[in-house]
Length: 603
Image (cartoon, helix red, strand yellow):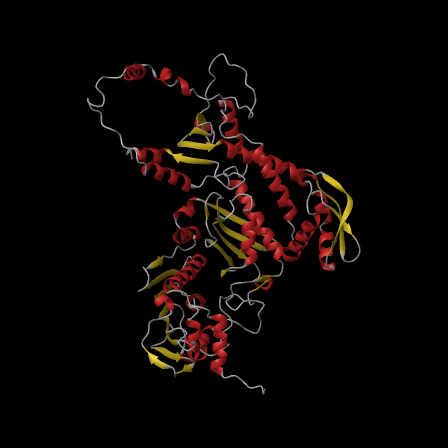
């Protein structure tokens, strides 16, 4: 079969199959062009989920008629010189507009600031009309109609209009977070208007617009750097989580990306603080020299490749964990809101008193009247104030001759104990509200943290194997494993080289008992090959420590003394990450006094 040159239209349609997968892909490319043009206001209008109409209007720099004619040709761009090693714009290939024009009806109207009139060009199915004069405001209007009409087979793979519209909304949200100084408006016949006013340099305010005001109340600031790589942004407290990963946003030099390695780093950072099946909320921005990252590895530019991926992954995990250690014991505000809603939605209705239902005044009523007439000290003797002395949990206290002096609630963040409910929940009074603590979940976390500290502060006890396990591996994997042999030895795993393509396992961690040493070594080899770091062994040891902590902590249903409960609160205040248990559930819920007053209509 003879080789022949493909037509320009067919070449563009092939490129469109890679670059323009769906209406959201076209919207992303057009918004990127508007941002590269310096726009401060971008309006997006859609119909039919973007398949019938997609219009992007911006107030950027616009184009001259000469530039407009070149803009719709393949590989014509103003954003790239002769190198791919220093890309500082969102777009750079010059493929988006000709690709869209080859499969849709495309028109571009534009005018520069100093021009007396604008210009317009139209393309339909790859056929380009000449540039014509046209009235226009400063900036550019790109209108795409009947997307994929020239390639109808692609339409069969489109989702419903509602799903395609939702995908465009997600693109706009990502761009809005990345560029808080730009005003975004998304409207159309198939949606309610979505507007994000510009917030200038206040990135958290823009995140609150996109993710909701709850994120502002439950976010921890991230600010870290390592070897000229900066990581900034905000991450939610562990108890503020979601059922999917859609609210995880990552930006590399201002470019929204959905890179698997970066998303896995976020998941690893929260690995022991969030329940299985739940996902953290985070917005992270990575800034580094453009020469250290390759953004030209995916047609949609959603994936990137770093020169040192281990450095980036370690920076994300370390920065998030450090932030959680610093402030991760905060309780999510959504817990208190759920409690408030539960109170409001109760079915309790007081029954009116009547002579028929209560023919005579019961004796208990007289007793209650006498009690109310007593001084407050006598009435509330059962809820006497907690001791100022802080005892360790389970310490056997000597009988006291008189009631000790009560600590002041404002002295401690988690307040002073006032009661224990149902032998499981501790009620403490703070300076501006109350805290309800799950005693089992809280103590479970404290025990786990103590065990983990011991685990990392000294070498793990190892047990020698009577017959060493021999693991056959590629030579490269063996080299990587032996480079981390000292680290494994400290964790109780002793390995040594056994020829060019094998590893001998001499000792395994005693904590793990009988285990599949061969499977563990292969897992560690895979991790090192993928991420240049091996955390599988540490994760196993910490999982075992978490299980032991669960079985060795205060059980639900145990009546605790006041000193024990106060000691538990003090240890929680001193322990990082005590706001959630090992399984990611909250250990306490805080209810502000203003919320309580609102329940009673006092504010």
